[in-house]
Length: 109
Ligand code: HEC
Image 1 (cartoon, protein in one colour):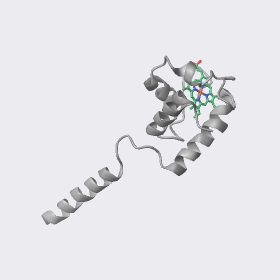
Image 2: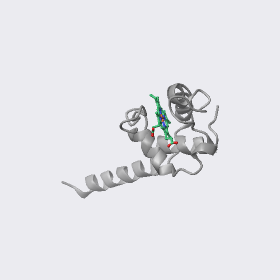
Image 3: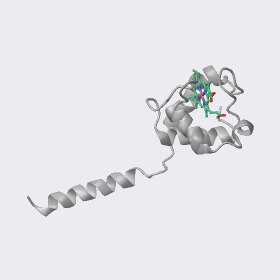
C-alpha cells in the first residue's frame, strides 16, 4: 500500500473539517425551517407568540436568568416526567443552541 493513499485520506479529512466549522450557524434555508418549527411545533405548547401555554413562556425576560446550556439540554433531551419532549431526532445540538440564542434575544418572526 502506498503512502499517497493515506496522505489523500488525511487531506480529505482536513478538507471536511474545514467545511464544517465547530460552532456553525445553520444555513439560511435551515434557519427558516427552524424558525417555522419553533413557531408551529414548539408554539403548540409554548404559545404561538411563545408567551406560554402548556409549556412556560420562551421570552427573553423569562429566560434571562437561566443558563443557556440547560435550555439547550432541555430541547435536545426533553424533560422526563413533563410534557416537554426530546427533539434530538429533529435537530442537531448546534441547532438547539442557535434556537436558544435566538429565543434569548427575542425570537425572529
Ligand atoms: C408537548 C408540549 C411541548 C412541546 C411541543 C414543546 N415543549 Fe418545551 N416545554 C414543555 C413543558 C411542559 C415544559 C416545562 C417542563 C417543566 O415542567 O420543567 C417545557 C420546557 C421547555 C424549556 C425550558 C424552559 C424553562 O424556562 O426552563 C425550553 C427551553 C423549551 N421547552 C423549549 C422548547 C422548544 C424549542 C420546543 C420545540 C423544538 C419545545 N419546547 C416544544 C412542553 C412542550
